[in-house]
Image (cartoon, rainbow, N blue to C red; front, side, top):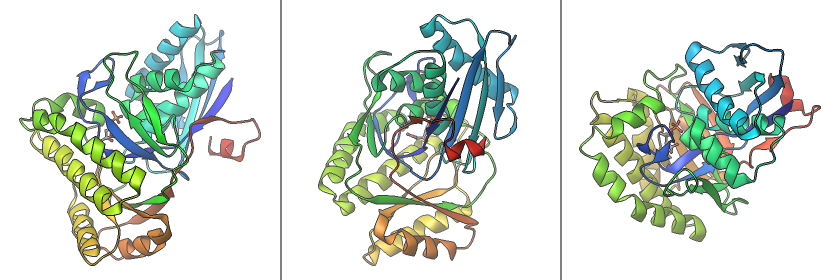
Length: 330
Ligand code: PMV
């Protein structure tokens, strides 16, 4: 038995589309910030007496689709460990799931760490990241803390994330304007398959290396103006691909656009804040941690914002001891 916790992450440079869907080999590299304060906690117990894997998520039985995805991830772990036993998996998150907050990232990072430890495997972090990638691409980044880069890689062995700056020397925060708490109609696994139907995807993918370089440099030099420019450009490019796929994916709600316009006006007036959206309507507003309280207060005044969550840089996925207070989430 083992228990692990992992944080979600917000992509500053987005992953969208795969070269290989089964292996989740991405079309382009990506960079993220791991989000502290938000967690998924997962307990895995292998038990030879179980006839099937038993999966509970957020204190309810997993749906058939969730069960199948967790069971196939456990199959990868069983294959590596030479284990036949089925497992009992109990997982819970303390933030809204399925609303563009990358719950699958923290979920598969925590599952990978807990399941491999429970199976008696002691994998290095690159191996954990590779394995987490198979469950959900963005999960490979949640193995690490701080600023993280998932390099494209050439194949299954070489596609994993690495820390860019795990200590997150640049204290940024993600102030998340929640405009909807309902699950998204089209999840990212299906969305990645649609990316190639957009005529804009080749241009987005071809120009990704220059945005990755600009983002890396902005982080290392703590240059907010440069970061803001490349983060919003990359977000707009991903959503342009989504909106021009067949069928199109329109993740924005009217309130998403209201927040985006407000943020651009605040920045034009001199405030260091920029936005990015994942596959959902909620708007992640990135700003220096010292101004997060003021940004949160302003976001609460934007019509359509129902809740505001604030996260600063978080640490890597970690195994928990049996008396860790976070087990109370389960
Ligand atoms: O890891 P997935 O399959 O949930 O895809 C994540 C996709 C985005 O969140 C939209 C972008 C990213 O890089 O996290």
